[in-house]
Image (cartoon, rainbow, N blue to C red; front, side, top):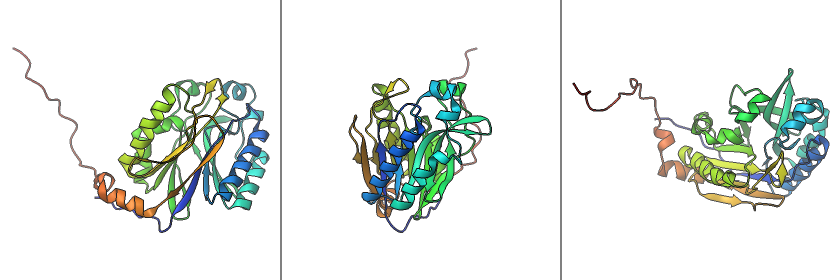
Length: 282
């Protein structure tokens, strides 16, 4: 049996959705700074932005001009975000194409008053992304106010193992910036995120794009799910919006008492699977 510590106090989180300007890092940084301040005004300590928001989901623009459209971890263009975080007391998780060591990554940057304090690189690249980006090598956990937030990017959330790894690291929430499009995207997100939350008895947070980005029309509907898999808060499909939710230790505790799958998870040490079936005919 596995035991996990719970946080002592609630944490208010915001999922932000907005229209990214294609390839214009400075303009998108300004939009994120505004959303960070809005999140702070709403009492949030953490705000999550969509996948690659600092450039938009613009693969061909990034491929053609990574110097302009991707950011470096120490990029001076990110300074207004640190200032907004300092002024509002908010930590931001911001989606970006990141250029590091001559390689490109699809990343979630954790930014506070001091600047970039951490980075998660997407581990599960979608098929067309593999022509441009390098795969991330490890998961990442962001700690804020006693809460452990497991970071993911879009397609990561389609794999139960990804959120499970975060939960086994003691995470209390699974936090994802994404691009889910109209059509199958809404359907996928409404299967994946409640499942990731319920299977691991964690909160699940989705920040999605709105409008058109990289040729995809996003479906918005950023949301937070509770550790019982039920929706706590949800944005609309088309407009810029901040959706707020209070992550509550008592709800985590109640969910884990009612659904003890994570606590009861253990390594059985079993031998490889046995193939069952009738004996071959003679």
